Image 1 (cartoon, rainbow, N blue to C red):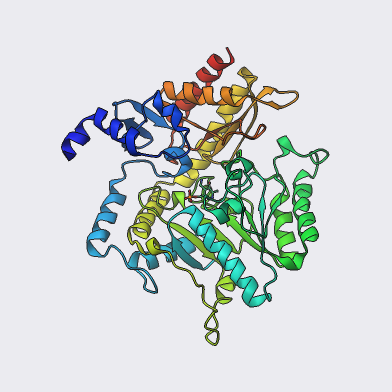
Image 2 (cartoon, rainbow, N blue to C red):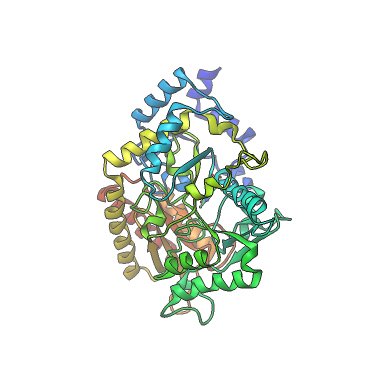
Length: 459
Ligand code: PMP
């Protein structure tokens, strides 16, 4: 039965169609087309169940497989570990957990403690709970507010959605957790009236300070930001922004929580996105690239100062009252150790910087040919091309057109992404996040597909 199932694509598709509830898709679409089932991957290429080859420009759909597919070294290490000791959780530790924590912390000067979990959302939940507990224990219940930014995304749970600045994802899931407060985005291309121009970065950060002053600085515990907004439109912080943000957090004694779920593990060319900007965070969360999807692992990393706030032997309520059942899976840190070693040994951070520059240069080159591209943004192998109906007015391209470009690329055998739907001005960005092993040949292939797609879609 199993063999039959594996060998018969039609049976697999039938089973999928009948029983799998896919992420991120309107299932009506699958009534007329087959679900795409990926069966094999090598490097940056994947094959679907019909045998069709694709070049993956988004590292497994949602920028996860940083070291590429088919890494036997990771699989071997995970297998050996699973046979020896697969799992133990609660107050106990594991050997790979200790080894990975030490290796990770060496890449994050100023931080010192790693709390293991298994998804980006969960790591962010841990951070929110830490902030709330610090407020209870050290600020008499005040400082419980958590600021988040318009267009940032932190995950799928109700608390993460409460901290979610992509309204289209939140619209139908309220009521939300109280005391999460939004601050404005920092995309100059779509700046609010009067904000763009010289010193935009400083003024965009001051807009955060205004919210803090409005809410009352003694009520605000943390500011949670993506280093570069990912799914919300590849929003790079403008010049001067992070310096001012850091200054504001220090001034009002607000913890800076940086969500590195996408930008972490070399995606932007440094180990973490915040390291591009000289920021010193108090809490850093990470997931996707930590083990490149070979195992489910996420981490909430803190400074020793944050950790110390939970140490008080005289108070039975002082320790962090949290657990992650699958934070005890030894497969996570063992895969993460190998993943990190690959990034290091193959110089993939440098490759991300070099190939990222090549990708952006290529996308900018396409701007000369295609009026549809209004703006190109990115850092390392992490880039976005914003499509517009009119460059002068910056009127966003229609969602259908953006989707047509993605679909055309797919027809050509190249998988690219696009921002979430439904918010004009933000749903019109093509997304690129190839594995950090990408070479010029693969980037050229991606650019050629986009070039062809834009030409055809523009008519
Ligand atoms: N933070 C960011 C910045 C993300 O992009 C995502 C996922 N796309 C998450 C958190 C949530 O991660 P997960 O889906 O693993 O819960």
